[in-house]
Structure formats: structure tokens, C-alpha cells
Image (cartoon, rainbow, N blue to C red):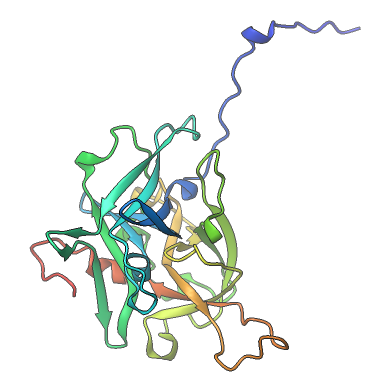
Length: 268
């Protein structure tokens, strides 16, 4: 018979925290407010360039004239302890200063781009905030890196759903549905085939990095684009025809323009 040593319950060592892929720490939940009134939930992610930190989300999250969505601030959720993911805090960001919008948005030859960036003041962030950010090194440089059968992930908060205890997003699988590198119908996005919902707007669409090194070692994922919205047929029979299940994803290289240094000419 084997004898087992036992310990009083009070002497039991605390379980070690399970390792979490840094992908989950790159995408905070985004909430839009008008004053103290909560409006909508969305997704977003961190992008770092030249030691400046940005929150990236969809442009229609910060303003959507067509639906009368006019928030004056966003709030994101930040982790405070990598070993205890239940510890978090809200961080609020004003969308206007002295009557002027503080976010950046852009246009190209195809028209407006549904991407917006807000710079975060690092001095105001909690000293122990746990943040994993994409950088220009995470962008796709060679279109051949994205094969037609590549398996992508969308990291976000569909309908606001998430792990409310550990404050983590959820992942949805996606595949490239239009040739990557080609502007679908002349617009600055490509299509994915994925199951998405409201609240996923602003989510990063990523691909596993095959050989991470340098800045990509801490976050070993390629950033392909920013999920915007679902695409559907306007003449679809709502009774007989299922939704297409296709989504618009804006190419991530727009971030290079939107995060240029202030001394450079700012986007519209």
C-alpha cells in the first residue's frame, strides 16, 4: 500500500496560473459612452510605433453619422497582473478635446476607411498595466505569406461576450474569402469567411507567425487587418436565403499612415 502525504487545506500551495497566449492580451474590450450612458460594445487592439501606443478600432465605433451613434469617450479594460488575470481596471479616453476629435481616420482612392486610432498617454496608464501590442514588424510585407488556404483568427468580443472573470476576448476561426492583396471591389479591404456578430468591429485579424523574432517574438502573430462589418446581399430573401457569412477586413497597412509622427502631415 502506498502512503500519501497530506497537507491541511490552509497549507495547500496555490495553483500556478495557466500560461495565456499573448494574443489574448493584445485586444481589450471597447465600450462607447456618451457621458455616463453606455452605448455600444466593440473590439480593438494595441499598436505600438516609435514608443507611442495606440488603440485601434473601427471608425464607426467612435462615430457613425448614419445611425446617430455619437459617443464622447471610449473605455477599455486593462489587465493589472499577468499572474492573476482577474485583476483589471477600466481606462477611459475622451474622443474630443476643445471641440475637436482626437482620433485619426483616413481615406484612400476608394473612399473612407473604417479604421480609427487613438493615441494613449502612457503617463496616465497604470504602472502595472499588462499590454501586448502589434508593431510595424507584425504587418505582412510579402503577399505570399498569406496562402489562400491560410487559417486566420478574429480576436474580439462578439455581442460583448467574453470571459468576464479573466477579462479575455474569444477567438473565431476565419479563412481568406477574396485574394489577399487585392482591393475587393476597389475598396481597401479583403473578405473573410467567418462567423461574426455585432461587437466584433475593430477586432484584429491575425495569422500565426511562422518565424517570430525581435519585436514579433513577444507577440508571434501576423496582423493582416481590422475587422469592420459583415457583408450581405441587399436583395437576399430573408426567409429562403441564409446570410453570406462574409466579412470586410481593412488592410492593416493603413496603420502606418494613421500612426505617423505628429510632425508629419496628419491624415484627414
